Length: 200
Length: 198
Image (tube, rainbow over the protein chains, first blue to last red):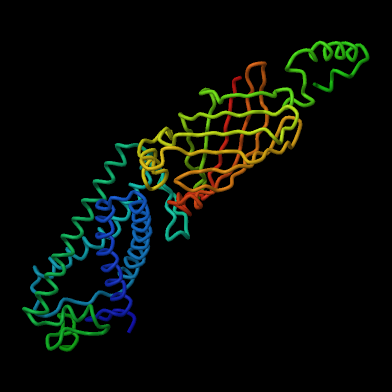
């Protein structure tokens, strides 16, 4: 089952979710590591890997957004309150924005840097700089934006994860399972849409 | 000498006279300026040791070294027995971007704390033209000595001073300086103007 259904996620959505999640965790660690290492040579290499994976995330996030907009969205499970559902959707929507915004801010950072280091993604593709003026002020600005958006994303993602764990362990519903197994529905609970369909 | 001077017989006579006059001056001996310039020189601080490293997508890092010293001797009888030795201080690198300079000075590239000098010593000089020569030698950087080759040609000469344009390409990797490849080329292009004073 590749595509989403009314009450379940398909394989494509699930792969997008976990691939980008794993890449983001890696990128946070890699980004922090660039600030911690003492060797400038190692720092240079780590920054280039960070840039490569950042562009990978940007590409995947763009495809994911396209896929999400083109797919039907699994409906609200029956026992979700409207407020809880709205909160969940708000968090998810902001993660969609952030997974595009963080790499874009990184792109602006490397484009405005007075170092002018080219981006050679995975030593295979030259990615041109954005048409932004190079200056130390712009570089500092975009460095801050990139950094704080990344920390903000980590915070929102942590909330998203805690909510998923709450559903799994505390509420015991199948919300987390829906994102682990293509076609999995919330067991014994159904969805608002599903109920309506069943009632018809 | 410009060829158009020879267009008319009158000009020819004039030019011949001029040539005879110039023969007495050090400038005139274009036939073999290297032999004419025989002697021992020290490399003047007015020389320029410029380098560039290309990067993917065009452009690159360009800079020069501000501190260096060296001597060369031109053997008038046998250019092949001439020699040159040259030392530069990598800490004096200039690129116009302080962070790049600090990176180059660090143990990522030059490691100036442990290897404050980069030196070149010629092992053989071959005359390649009236005023040009190929210089073979050994370049020592970061404690590693490897063969290196430069092309030199006389660009200006007076009685006390001779100016060479010296060009060469050095690979970074044999010296353990290949950080940043393949974004930055492994090849460092040197384009130097060496002024020797007697």
